[in-house]
Length: 184
Image 1: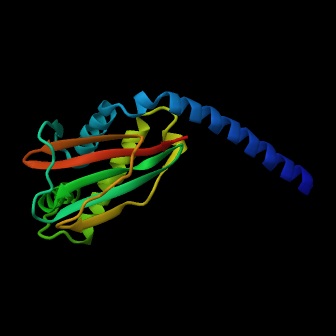
Image 2: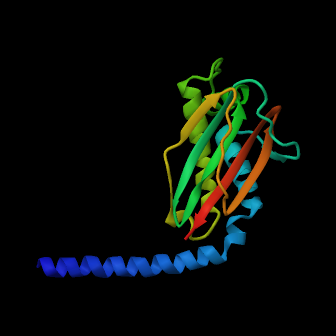
């Protein structure tokens, strides 16, 4: 009985590996579709409308972190695509986003506000990967990491591709970056 079970497991693993190899080839060949900036724009617009009830548009003015506190959330991608989704905003924008999400007012970037920004990044990452056929089911997301402070930079070495856009809603600006450091 144990031999039959082991044979079934090996057969299932071999079948999965051949499907993953086929999917990997199609992802590699469709890097233009994966790196299409319109998918990021559509994801940001949808998520902000759904989660916050606000209209959000891409800004021609690049996001500038400024001199005050900033909040950065990072959600990693793992699987057929490895990389990260990075959401960055000023502290006062994080307060506004958390306020819209929870219908509350916040005066400081506390743990609740950090959790809200982490969740916003997580939802954006999921929405973006859901726009690419085959990527959604073959690419997992990490738990969000949130960084706050006044003077820090986030550096990624030689990505395969990177999409970085600035966005605005009302008077609030933020940036979203998709970094891909590997496609299988």
